[in-house]
Image 1 (cartoon, rainbow, N blue to C red):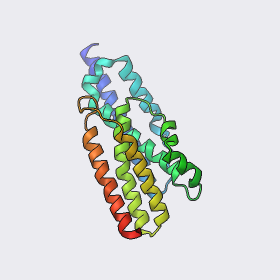
Image 2: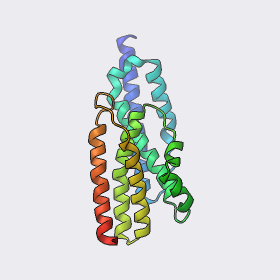
Image 3: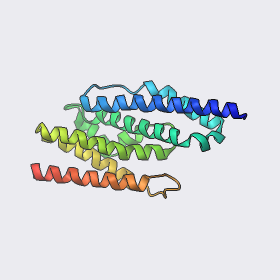
Image 4: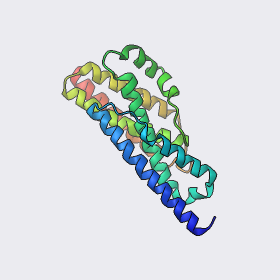
Length: 195
């Protein structure tokens, strides 16, 4: 691959990454505002990015950071969207939440790309769930808050089973520790108000 082609492909990957991150930010924001956004926009871009990385694996050394961040944001947005769309819809939650708590919803959520981005995205989703949980607590919607707490705990239990060194999945240990602290603070807030 010529140097000019590498530069062009790198710039294309960075543009795709920025677009994916921006679209995912919109979806995450909609999760908190109740906008119910459907994450379809970046699906094609994620697919294109992964195809580029598959056909030109030598680009991984140049664009790994941008691709990794985009896939991580994508995973976070998809996890939150799955939670919002399945587990937290008012009073449709009984059966669906049970599925989430049993891991069915997580297992059914297919994400393209490396599994490390998915795990890091789940860690980040726990932080977003805390924000949603606190909004429910402030509104005195304690039953909804309890369900959010249960989903966050289920997500944490899921990621706890994965122990990879930083050389394999950079920042996983740190993000798992942050998710554990986040979950513990949610448990303390809930226990203080509702126990």
